[in-house]
Amino acid sequence: MEHFDENTIGKFAQLKTPFFYYDLRILDDTLAVIQQNIKDTPFVVHYAIKANANAKVLTCIRKAGLGIDCVSGNEVKKALESGFQPEEIAFAGVGKTDEEILFGLHKNIFTFNVESLAELKVIDELAGREGKVANIAVRLNPNVNAKTHHYITTGLEENKFGINYWELNTLFELLHQLEHIKLRGLHFHIGSQITDLSVFKTLCNRVNELQGEFKERGIVLEHINVGGVLGVNYDNPDDELIPDFEAFFNVFKQFLKVYPNQEVHFELGRSIVAQCASLISKTLYIKEGIKTNFVILDAGMTELIRPALYQSFHKVENLSRLSNVNDSKYDVVGPICESSDCFGKAIDLPKTSRGDLIAIRTVGAYGEVMSSNYNLREKVATIYRDEI
Ligand code: LLP
Image (cartoon, rainbow, N blue to C red; front, side, top):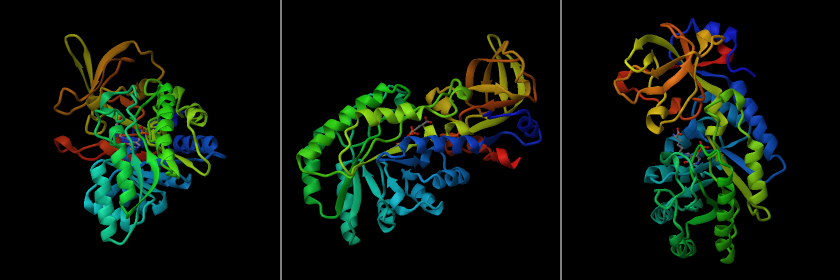
């Protein structure tokens, strides 16, 4: 499948740029591959709505039968409004407010993924006050290095997420004492954009050990939630429009100890939605510098903040000259008044001119949702392949 064909690119020329372009065929195919790999297994996939909360994306995901992972009260609200059932909703996050906890309790969501002992006590207290019992999973910090960018690493002792190993005894005491919580599972999430599959094997081994500690105390866990994590190919998206879910799930099939009647939950965000969207922009100016030439675009860090925030790479393509050779190098930058508003340095492109259409690939995850109005810029349009 081609993300762009000549016909679509021809239609882009009539549209106001910049805009997010979605090809939902890629999303549907990705969801089909996931389903294929989890059928006849105890695996359940929740979609991490933080990656992209676009209504049409959510509809595809709900139709595919996935559950949903939220990290704020508004995400829970959005999930419910989008047709997800309360029993399909997991709610994580280190700083849930009382209002958010009460909202989740009233809606009877599947589980609160509890990130600290302090939060556990507050949930118990609020549930008691409301005459309810809260379903919870405790998020444990497994101290596993995700070998990814340090800003998106979450499973090390130095990170703010989850309950640490040395707090386990107090946790067991609290689980015994508190009457308004029901422990359903364990939750782990060690980071994002992980491409080294050996990290998942290390995670499985660590989860097996930690699960053993609960088992020894006679605690039955209905589910083990191993979080999000799987990375995508930003360098060459067309080589891997659908991530290798077979290899990913196989690691868990092989190395995770699953007890009878236990489910294994995944919270996948990026790997589901990243490749189905591109940011389409127009070249405003070519500026000659001393050491480099600049392609100045009408899209910037307001639409895609990932390069500025995580030094992340997104493939840049000149759609107006796809058949030309990449014989020039440019720094591709946006119009925002910040030096970090740069999509990439020394990018190989064909000789580029004012008016050329430029695609920035793999923006379906953490693109539109992280966009801002900085410099008082307007929110840009969202265009779907089947609607132009
Ligand atoms: N579950 C939890 C508890 C999470 O915190 C996250 C992501 C996920 C699941 C989904 O992870 P994924 O499958 O997408 O890797 N804005 C950053 C990524 C931040 C990820 C935050 N947590 C970026 O643009 O790379």
